[in-house]
Length: 342
Picture: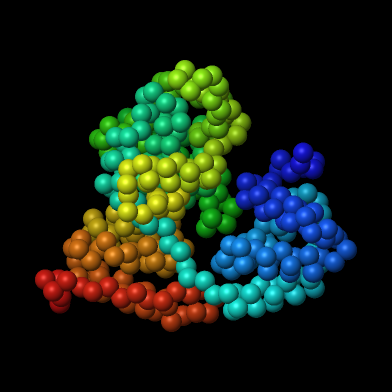
């Protein structure tokens, strides 16, 4: 049974704090006796078992969790934090990692997924397709889409709606508004919302309910039914598992992940001939990290404008040389087809 107050932690904070607690228990280490030693040992173990890519995120999640539980001062001091940060830098140098990019979802993937899922029959399929569409049509991060609540949805017209969420990764705590349009497709986001409201109208009665509600299946496999819990949203882990299963079942070349929806959004815009500044604006990227998605090899045979090709190459080259404070990666140069050469 989890200690009191753990219900207030986010999914990621909960997972990291629970893993840290179990690690210390198995090795009979007392964090509060020597926080510096305990954290250095755990982060070293995490680096070897997983990757050095997310060590700072792990440490920050543990500190945030302690702050939420009112244990910030006891959990780590400023001096210990400085020492542990130096240890993380040493681990990153000793165990360098290659950035792992989520393969972009292509529109062909989306069509195959829509043919496979049955949103009119299965609540799980409806939630999966609605969430995929919410992210893919607007470039929203999956974790941010899961914050959508019924009260944040506003109908502007028969073919346009507005969705407001409390905050995003780059909004600095301010609310963010997204707009969706009826694309004319059978299962676009707006039409899926209409199906959702018609079949499960009880969820829409309370404005504080989450849009993507958690559920549990009861009954036999052949006659199971979904019990909904609108007070809790689905998780990114759930979506990740759904995408993995669909990728394997539909025999995709790569295993799609949650961020494949956001990177797929950027790639779809580029293939449609949208300019790079406009892509950055539409995807609400605060920096040029979106260029990482656009260097995927699928554009070698699809790129329409050689000028855009060269702009992306230049952007990636500048990004790779500027290591200070930014992500490090090697610039993989595209080969421009002869018919597109300037």
